[in-house]
Every structure is written in C-alpha cells, then in structure tokens.
Length: 290
Image (cartoon, rainbow, N blue to C red; front, top):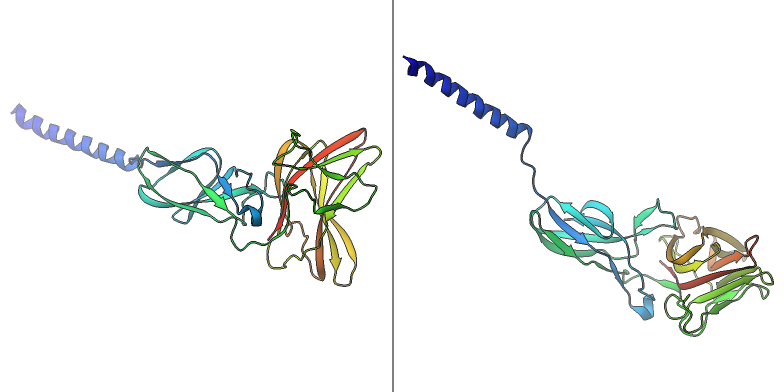
C-alpha cells in the first residue's frame, strides 16, 4: 500500500528537478569560451630612398576579423575573439590626427596588415603586425637632415637659422636633426620649403614630422594663387615637448586645400616666448605626402 503511494511522489519529484534544471540552462546558457590575440606593437618599414625614415612604432591597433571591425586598442593588448578555427585577422595602424588625442584614426596612408590565425578557446595567439606605405603614394617633400643640405630655407635673413645638429649631440633624433636656437637677438624663426609643390584636390595630403623643444611652433602653408598672389595660411599650433614626438597633420581636414591655387610651400614658424632669453626647437624626418 505504502509503495504504491510513494512511487508516484518520487516520479513527480524527479520530474520537477529535471524541469528546474532545464529551465536554469535556458535562463543561464553556457557561455562560449573565447580565444585571444595579443599585439605588442606595430612595426613600420619603408623604402628609405623613396619614402624616408621608418623610425616609428605605431601604438594604436584597429583590428578586424574576417573583414568585420572588432575594435581599436592601444598596444600592447590582449583581446578576446569569440571564434575558433582558422580566421583572417587584419590590423590597421592608428594615429592621432593633428596632435589631438580625441581624433584617433586608422592612418589612411598605410596598407593593412593581414594574417591568418587558428583560434582556440583560452589560447592566446600572438601576432606581430608590420605596416608599410601604399606603393602609389607621392612624396612631395622629404627632409631627414642627413645629406648635409637642408631643403627648408629661412624666409628672412634676420630670422633665427635652422642648423644641423653636430655629431654626438644627444638632442638629435636619427642621424642629424634640424636645430633652432631662438634668442633675444634673433627672436623669430621661420623657414619654408625651398621648392613649391602642387597638392591634388581629390586626396588627403599629410605632413609628418618628428619634433621636440621647449616652445610651441606653427605649421602652415604659403599659397600661391592662380593670379600670382602669395598668401600665408597658418594651420596648426604644436605645443612644446621635452621628448621627441611625431605629429600627423591632415591638410585637408585643416582646410588647406582650395580652388584657384597653383602651388604651395610648407612653412614652420616660432618666436621667443615672453620671459625667455632663449628657446630651442628640433625637427627631423619632415614629409609631405599624398
């Protein structure tokens, strides 16, 4: 008698347990375990005679998996990927546009690094991206201060001169660098490229340069219109830096490209700050490209 009453109760209890456990799996399903990819840094290679210096390591990685955007990361980074097996990983080198940290972008002048990796749950796969300029880029100006001459000339004989660092100068960046000493006797510094160049209206030209110094400076363009008028167009004020930095200046974003212009010249300007008896600036690897 008792057994006939107990067995149905046991069956009912087991059924309730199964239903509850199934319901828990539905509410809290087992989460997939990601694989991981690590990037320490992005290396940079150039054809030096044509493209100039490659002395720079890009610190931002714009990452794509199978051509789909995954995220932007500051290196070094280890990031999860919810996928397994063989997949295409693409990395674009990121820059800070015009020296403004809020305007990060994938640098449009560099080709994307592509590789194929085999991902597995809980396994970290390291990749070592190497990026290069696109082969069809045009380099209008290229000054590395290493051939004994300088293609940037003073706009006035009374200006503080741009000179080459001497061998062994610890302020130099790579080989020789350009050095300026602004003093009370020569309180203005301004140089411009010696030869004019033409900028296309259908692309985004950039100025790249390495710099350091204890005073700010201005980068701009001298513009010669089709009627022969020469205009001075200051584009960007660059803050002082006690360590070498690299800046990427997007000329189109700054409104430098316009109609009825026959040629341009790049210029750099600074003056002695109030209260200073002297100020120093250093430049290297100045490029104008599109």
